[in-house]
Image (cartoon, rainbow, N blue to C red; front, side, top):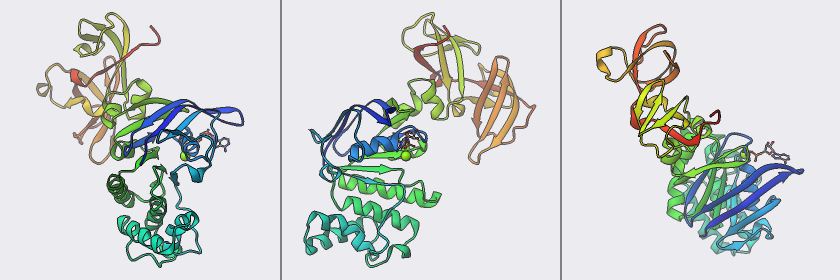
Length: 349
Ligand SMILES: Nc1ncnc2c1ncn2[C@@H]1O[C@H](COP(=O)(O)OP(=O)(O)O)[C@@H](O)[C@H]1O
Ligand SMILES: [Mg+2]
């Protein structure tokens, strides 16, 4: 067990800065998702924590000790990669026991530890199997077992589910969550998938272009994004400007009561999530609403996404109403409690 603290990391490749000013504290037993698009620098950060890459500046602190000068095997942090990377000539037992053998554990101890971890990762009975006799999901479970058997202080997972098909991915998510909470192991879980980050972690750290943009609970990032870019990353599509005035946001859509703090008179950007906009096909259904015309729609299974032209611009709405057609007139309402006004003054003020 141990806490992980990253302090002011700057990481370069060939003098090119890739990660800048990165600080993050992960509590003992906590699971944090490091989320970001491809190329954001997620793997780079994991490598620095694991000791596979040295930062240009900053500290990696595990359990209160600065470990920058320690080689990977002395850090008590293990990494699970996107691909299982198992030894093909060894069976499951041997793959899992490999690290224990390197460490000098005796045979009896190794086999006890392996049995326990096989059960935990739902691989019981598969110990004698060869790697090529396993499915992709089983191979990834062996990779997880191989990391967990070492009982590391810190578990680092680099998009471990991205090579699995959708059903299997869901199953593996549940398994990782169960195992993580059972072993209470401090975990940094990397993903580019926002839904996965939200469901897999106690806190989410969003990385965009090598910079940490927001850290918080999954609900915080989803419902209270720090700025428009974070909101956009989480699927927000509606941005509009207005001025705060006496507890109201005055914009083209009306004078909307909001709970934003001070900033009277300042030009601000606000957002509302597509699923939070109320839509009705009959005017009587919706008080305080305004008119719009459907431009196009896309059926997404559980909901339909509709682009609606309003007198003041276009809004994207996610609605259960599935029979919308282009050209159709609708009424929209923006519930004031769903509007988020960003605290930064709008850039073009
Ligand atoms: N070995 C390397 N040499 C030079 N540039 C690299 C190397 N590895 C990654 N990069 C670059 O660093 C950036 C971050 O990469 P990476 O950490 O792999 O991103 P992510 O894991 O978030 O997709 C990317 O622009 C990538 O092209
Ligand atoms: Mg990566």
